[in-house]
Length: 256
Image (cartoon, rainbow, N blue to C red):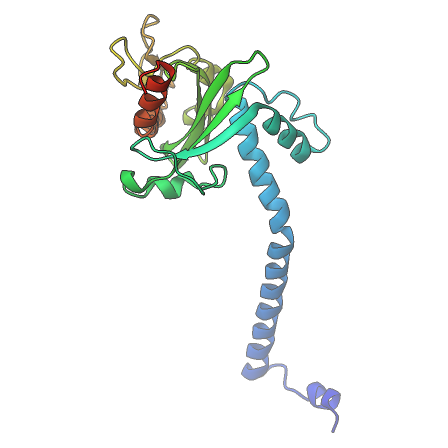
């Protein structure tokens, strides 16, 4: 009896046949999914890299034309190469760490480590007018999930030049407002040090910040938890760079 004849005589209502058929379908589907995931991985990685570069460029206001670009990956890569002149990694003591790629650091992994073990990425930009900006990635917790962003500081390492924030699942019209230009523009010109050179970070004030307060912005109406999460994110992340900032300031003042 041929194999084909044996298959035809199998009782398709038997438990053995149903189990074998179901197992076969599961294996086939799993193989197809694995193949699709492998085939799509390079494209997904390109998208992740592009999105990260765009966020960094947005913090310095140099992401114009991205949405209209025919080849977004190459267009963004070109802008990034033009404006980002250095990528470095530092630690909480202010030392520069060699042999670690700043761009590929997963910040959420670093922040789960003790502060003394963290590798902290920083990106240095040079604009068309010759001014230098220091871009710091930040990450924290909102109401429903992670929030993140980039803070660009002027050469004084105190005044904010630009800011961009994102989120995974904050409420539209409430916590999700952190991703809007209106909210982000509040940070421009604010400072993270006081006149005594003490680190203050930025307060996110419920009910509205005093317009004369150069260390505070308005919180999101109805988004108190997200606003406070963002405030904590800024303090925790920016404070980790203080030792490095102090070294840079001493160098610029000729003290070292």
